[in-house]
Image 1 (cartoon, rainbow, N blue to C red):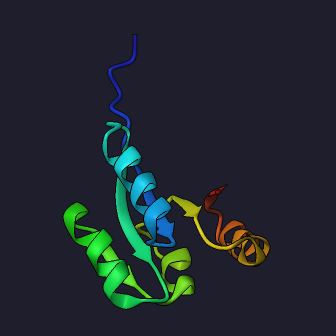
Image 2: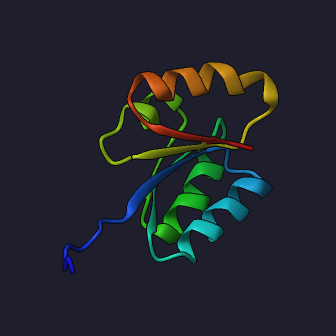
Length: 99
């Protein structure tokens, strides 16, 4: 039996509204994940969501997507942004979930 310890999946959340908060709480309550980055067009909202998790906050989605601190990008934005953000995240070899 292997005793190798698995690292936590580092999650970046794009969209710090009500659903972004629910998603962040979900990941924080599961031991295999760590919220490391939050992005929102409103800087104060991004910081408000990021701070309790000790995560970085930004208004620049490309900064989150290209960060080595993020393994999985969870996109919680209006649908018209889903495709472009997903493609950008995938091009940076990130795992992607979309709500």
